[in-house]
Length: 444
Image 1: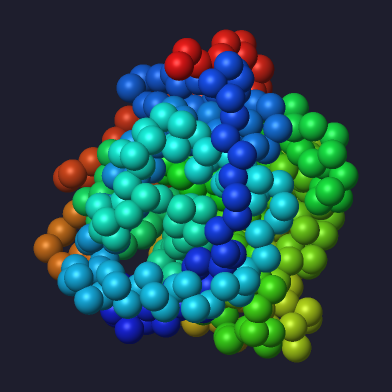
Image 2 (image 1 turned 30 degrees about the vertical axis):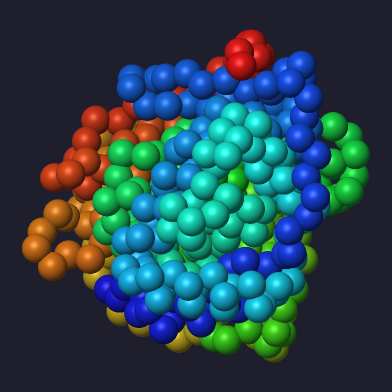
């Protein structure tokens, strides 16, 4: 299945509806003596941002430590997608005429305001967006976190467990494919959100606040790909959903998925994620694969087909594996896996997708031959559906991840100039260890 790069008209129209959504709010800048509730480290050359404290404090640390990266990334994105001065001006004017199209959960709005304060404190008058020749504003940070509503993520995922794995635990994998932009290559980031947000944040959103590890870019606080402290994984996939039945009130899908991953317990992940998605309106079509630790070979994956068409099952359809995990015979093992790419399977009539068929047939073949899905096999599957670097190829596989939910481990690889992510050596992330990092405040 091929996704076209959005046209200029589409870019401006969609952003005007969905991207910049709130009028700017006054921001309280922390005093110079306040601690920075975050720090940067590296794992095998990959930057890791550790964050803790309240939502505002986490955002402040993010902006203070990575302000230049956030500005450079957004500027680069705008200039690559909007090439002409008139297009940039139209983008800014159109976006500001459509305020409040989105519903930003309060704790994430606080985090973005904190991010702005951190950028302002660190950079002062240098906190400028060159594309617009002005200082960065709160609305710009909201726009960054609404880019998936426009850009549409073309991805591939799978999960296996029980009779399909050597130890009966879960193994899952995902490729994040997106439009090829120089700005995004080599600017990736791992964020470890420690589980110590204050109680008032939990109460205000009526959701938990589990720590989790995010594979992302500077400035983006939603969930593209992540695993939480309970071993639950959530990934974003595009699907061709219909126009939403409501004109506004949408939650940016990255933030809806973050609410889900921060609330999903390993033993109740299905119910927890379903509850979050059912209570937040989507602006675009989504497939949301969720995996979690398998216990005694029980099914450990689900795909939520999710969009803004409330006339169709209130916007949410659940896709479960058939009979998964009930038996351990080779004949039944073929249902101990689940595949997901970019089309609906239950919410609408399925369409053909080469990547989906390739993954599904491979897993079925492994099941029929009694061969387990182990780590090397998982990487081989991801490589088989990666977007190869080739003339005319509009997409790039920016990151590939293999999850081991029972072990709370992520293996993450990133793209390079000549290779998709799955072709490059991965780094190993121990989620529990990252979330228990010593909270040494960054120096100013």
